Length: 181
Image 1 (cartoon, one colour):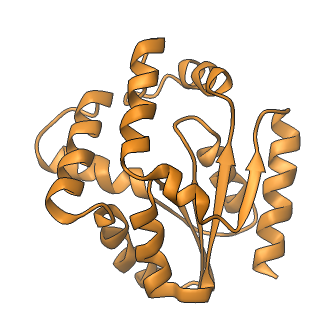
Image 2 (image 1 turned 60 degrees about the vertical axis):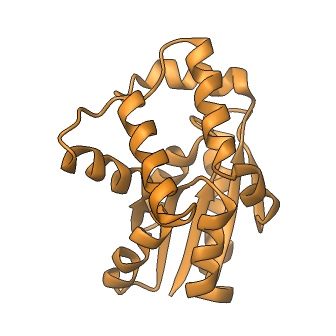
């Protein structure tokens, strides 16, 4: 089984890249869904604050790769030839996938400027997104603390998402088809 991980800061384009994967028939596991499920299990509302606190708590109690470890059985249960994991946040998560899937794991970093990412976060209006610049910077800092820089240093493919949506989608499509084949 080939496993492709998408890593990047908030609103960099990971979800849009996952849509391209789905269009190519590649199933998706969203790491954020695992965290949001834990938020719900704890009886909390899905807000940026609660999702961040629970994600920090999971990592504090179970280790920095904990969300990936929780996703691995979900990936294996899919019994697919190829799966995309959307939303890696750190090097420990990438290491957890590499340990299990070895050379079949490919890490793709999606990078975009902070200005572009903030505009996208405001436009998408997700319940766990921030609504002001200060909050956005704090969310970046929190996710960088989880080891995002380490994960980005481990990438196999780097995709820039500062151009048009169609350019980005085409670059993602090309990268995925190259890995798939």
